[in-house]
Amino acid sequence: MIDIDSPPLREGDHTKDLESAKPQAAVAEAGFYDADMKDVSRWMLVAAGVMGFTAIVAGTFAAHYLPWESLDPDAPRWWDTGAKYHLTHAPVLLGLAVLAAFRSGKLTTASAVCFCVGVVIFAGSLYVMSLTGLRWLGAITPIGGLSLMAGWVLLFVAGLRGGGSGGRKDNPGSLTRG
Picture (cartoon, rainbow, N blue to C red):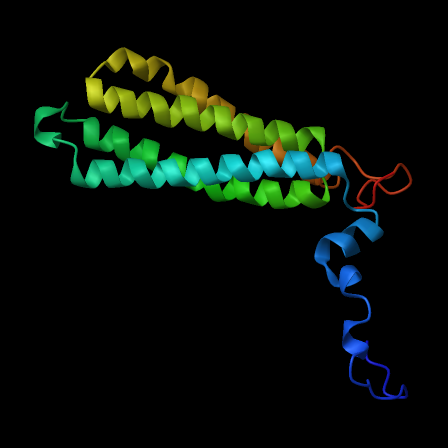
C-alpha cells in the first residue's frame, strides 16, 4: 500500500534493500521456503522439462518419421493416445514443482512420482506397442493408467489437507510451516 503522506523518494532510495526484493528472500522471510522444498521443487521441474521435451520429440517423430503404412493399423491411434497423456502431464508436473517451491509435502511429492511413473508406463507401453506391434504390451498400459489416477487422487487429497501433507497444527490449510 502506498502511503501518500510520506515524503517522495529521493534518488537512490529505491535501491536500499535489493536483497529483500528478491522473491525467494521474501518467501523465506515469510517462512514458506526451505532447502528441502527447493530440492523437491528442482527434481519436479527437471522432470517436467524432460517430460515436456520428450512429448514434443515423440510427436515430431510420429508426424515426420514413422512409416505408418508398414506398422499395425492401430499404431497411429495408440501413439496418439500415449502422446496426449504424455504431454498433458508435463504442465501438471510443472504446477507441482511450483507448488513444491512454496509448500512441499509427502502427498504432492507422491503425486509427482505417480505422474512420472504413470507416463513412463502408460505412454511408453503405447509407444513401444505402436512401433513393434506387440499387442501384449496393452496389458501393461493400464498399470500406467492406474499410476496416473493415483497421482490425481493424491493431488486431490493434498488439496483437501492444505497443499502438501498438512500445514500448521492450529491451521491445516495454512501455507506456513509449523
